[in-house]
Image (cartoon, rainbow, N blue to C red; front, top):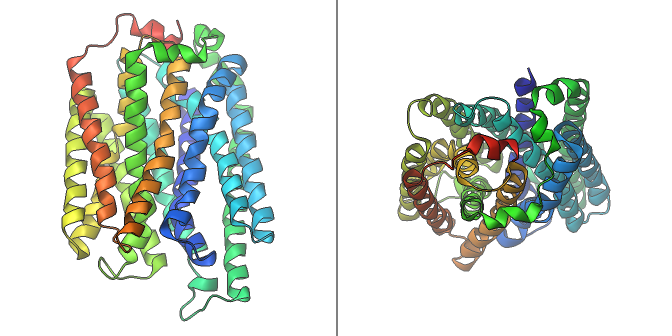
Length: 415
């Protein structure tokens, strides 16, 4: 039951994260931004992982899992309430601040929830559990772009034949308000449910996990913890760079030449592929070495990126969407492979791994800069995630050749 409660958190932050994809297209039109400027929404979100991950690890160690999770959800609700204030002032930086606050809460949530799922059962089934929970995260990321596109990319400046006027801009800004107020309401409901279940979660976690007080910086003494953080950096950066690009990429005349709303809804296929892949991957990982599965997925994802850079039209569009299927098992598999090999307590290692998510702030900006430098050629922007997947293949091969650390159960438990 505790595992079920925690899995709802994965859905909640997946939904929130993928809402950024249609938001990029919305703010680009409403505020008249370049690709690089619009991708700052992604950077504001993911840079929070770099700022908040180590403090978050300390909070998890001090507060325990259930109280840290409740604090995370309260922070996320607060960030959602900042959005209407920012749009009332017609101030794009205010939206960036709100996204940073929400993502800081998500960071704390991830630092707590990922090792908690690992701790809720045996080491042998840890890959399965984390991939299964991440499948519900992918369900959230699938629904987020579809619903977000319906709210953010219709009416106002996006209505058929509409021009950018004060009235149409205000209508589109109110749509942004509605999306984030609704998101805040979802977070509040999840918080109420988790508050009622806090004793169940605390009772299910081994006592030694709750008692750990590991120094945050101890993770840097473990080469595998650092290697895992580098892998997370490039995985999240690649995944988010693609997701951030897809709405405008699919809508472009060179690809599918469709309205932005329709393109935004199609992004759900990218995240939906990840959801399907995680359910399939959960089963495959019960019979196949995790590092081998990761190696195959990274090579196939890199190959699809190469197809996008060399083609156009429907071939490029559907190749880009298909990458989501192979992204599916990457994050949870990198996470558990690292926990198995790192000689550092789980809280510290988890904090360092979540710090690596800052790649989602860096690589999309690089992809946007490539697009701006090539007169808006979004195909060439896919060279950025292609490089990321090549580095992940190296991580997978190294993990395949390195056995888990002896006494890994004690490491995961926090000793």
